[in-house]
Image 1: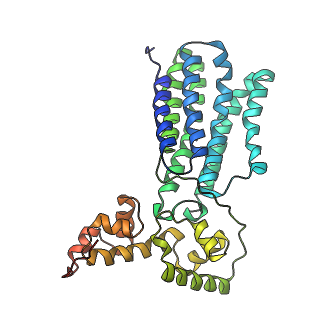
Image 2: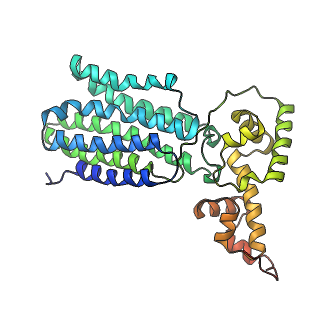
Length: 336
């Protein structure tokens, strides 16, 4: 075995990532907790599997059991709804039950721990399969990127659980000595993936609550869209790069899910695409007035060039540079 175990190396890297996250602006409480849990698990795996310290072999399943519920609560806090402590306390049951089984039925942990990873991973993917508008707390300027990040994390939880299956297969094949390597490569790799993804600029933790979804109402949809278009025209809220569905719904005094549904039914697009289409219009006007691509991107409310280029291509059908070549250049450049 290497002198510095792979999980310990991963734990050090995750520790640096945690420090970077804590230094970054924005809300990050649950994301930091998730990243810290992944780092801690790397340390525990090293001490248990590579240095053979018995107490850490005992607590390894319990510390592992904290990661899936933490990932789920982080997902809820950053993307779906505000944390409701009375409701979300139920997620303590998994780690608590793992602790109970540690003393009462240790062999049950071989089923419980993979079950937690797979169950929470599948639950996350099911929510994400309903579309970007199910994530009202995400910045609209990020487009589909938050959905992709959380899909990777959900998939990482599921794949991490499969390492237990590989361990069982190795034991059946008489290759029990492979267990530390399987844990090092598969489990640690997934911990690194989950931990690193928490640093994505697409994730944040706004301080807003969600509201229940009302019944569809065609007349109400039209009324909402009229109010929304008027608000967009008068206050140009789409220029705020941190705008979220929840913020927009509060300004209109409309439930977020009802606003999302109205936009979808009336325009055929989700909220992010509706907002970004307006931003692209602003960017096109800025480009025609002589601003460079980066300046136009920022003034239109986009944070990242990749998302700006992707949305520009979707709305206009060309890249910004290709579109600009086809436009007449203004005689007097825009002063900025």
